[in-house]
Length: 147
Image (cartoon, rainbow, N blue to C red; front, side, top):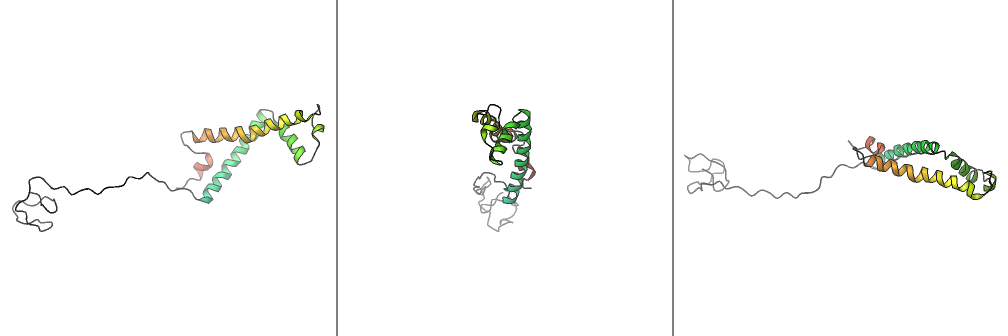
């Protein structure tokens, strides 16, 4: 038998529920199932890394991007563009004196190619490659993730 008040199974020989004390004279044969509480489904929210860990992750990723950038610039023989940029910006050398052709286009083309490779292509490949990989994080983000 089941108690009509609390819905728990009781001893068939008793007149009162052993759990709540309610009379069980007219107890139904089917157990009364208490209504389940509605649970509001929310998306799983993880613990996010704080500002310090994010800064360390940024520094780690920045150092790796610079290393990969230097390798890529060297591999594609764009070191002259970085060198020309240094001479123009730091030493204030005239553009005409940098190349044998003596034209601004002859000096600016390697600069644009080297900066495009170093500032656009390498970071894009770095983030796209690592964040679409199995770990879905860059080395900086995965090494500084909250635990």
